[in-house]
Length: 148
Image 1 (tube, helix red, strand yellow):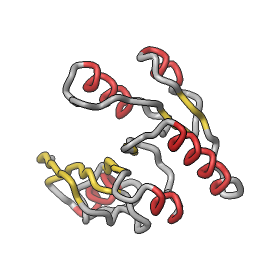
Image 2: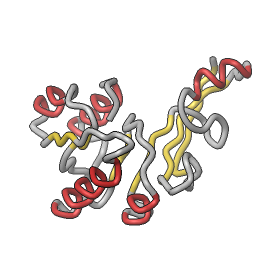
Image 3: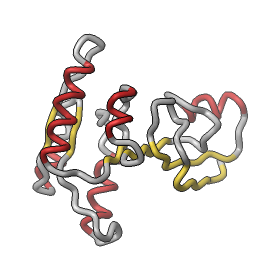
Image 4: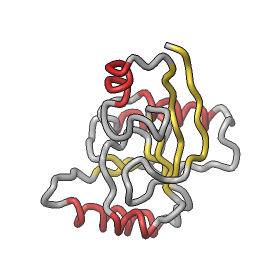
């Protein structure tokens, strides 16, 4: 979870409005503590695992344990802004959806809108795809675009 709150609010509000049928949000996992108030608003447990290069694998192991403890079926990355390790991706193969703010396969990685603007692209979009060990390369689930 990044420090930006718009994706989290969007998912939680849509779930509350019944637009995500059969979806129970078990928890929110973040590497920052700044959006705890959003989770508290919806009475959803909020877990923080600060990640650095030195502790990444250790923190991911703790996340995996927590996710398994709660029998979570699906993980949604919405501005998580961390590259998951191959072992994490392998453990939850086809269970991690990444919401990428670009029309993949173009403009992978960070700052895709900046890259699109530099190229003069007139259509931008978003892509939901399964996370794999290859950054922004997983099978595409859904895409949508809008004209700039």
